[in-house]
Image 1: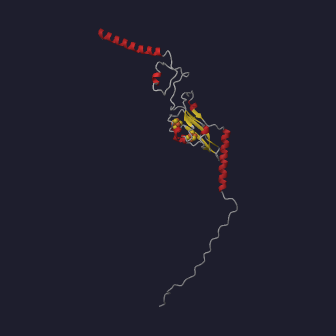
Image 2 (image 1 turned 180 degrees about the horizontal axis):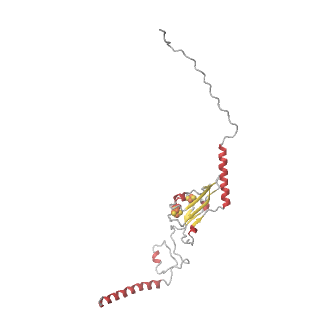
Image 3 (image 1 turned 135 degrees about the vertical axis):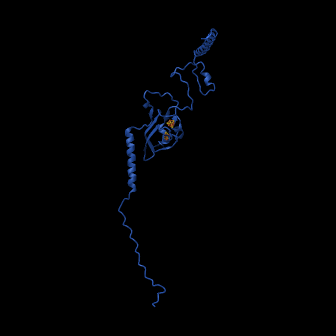
Length: 220
Ligand code: SF4
Ligand code: SF4
C-alpha cells in the first residue's frame, strides 16, 4: 500500500501534467480563433504559417500542394502519338492502350510530331497507380502529366480507371477497316500481275570430242 507521502507526490505530478497539457490545448485553441488563408508551401517558414490553425475547412480551404507533386495523371490526347512507351515503362501495368494504325499521317501534335496511330483505348487505372511518375518522364511529346488533383475519391474503385481515348465505337471500326483495306492492297500489290514468262531454255551442252592419249600404249 502506498504511503501518504507517495500518494500526494503522484497526485501533484498528475495535476501538473494535466495542467501543462491543457495549457497547450488552450493556447492552440486561442490562436486558432483566426485562420491564415494565405499559405504558400514554397516559403521557408511554411510550417510556422500554419501555427494557430486547428484545422482547415476542407474543401472550402485547401492547403496548397507543391508544383512538383505527383497526383492524378492527365493525358492530352491531341498530343499523344500512341507510342506505348508509357505503358511499357509502367511498373504496375496500369496503363492500357489499344492502338489502331493509320495508312497515312493524319495530324501533328503541338510540337510538330507526326501522328500515325489512333488510340481505340487509352485507360489509366489510378486505383493501381503507385505515382512513380515514370510514364511522364518517357513520354516523347510530354502530353502525359501529373496534375495537382489529389482528391479523386470515389465510392466505386472501378471509377479510378480513367478513359482518355476520344474516338467513338463507329470511328474506331472505320479506322480499323481502313487499316485492314490498306494491308490487303499492300499484300495484293506484291503478287506478280500479267502473263507468266516462259521458262528459260537450258543451254545446250555440246559433247566434248574424244582426244586420243598422247603416248598410246605399245602392244607387246
Ligand atoms: S505514375 Fe508510375 S505507376 Fe502510375 S501510371 Fe505512371 S508509370 Fe504507372
Ligand atoms: S508515352 Fe506519351 S505519346 Fe506515348 S503513348 Fe504514352 S502518353 Fe502517348
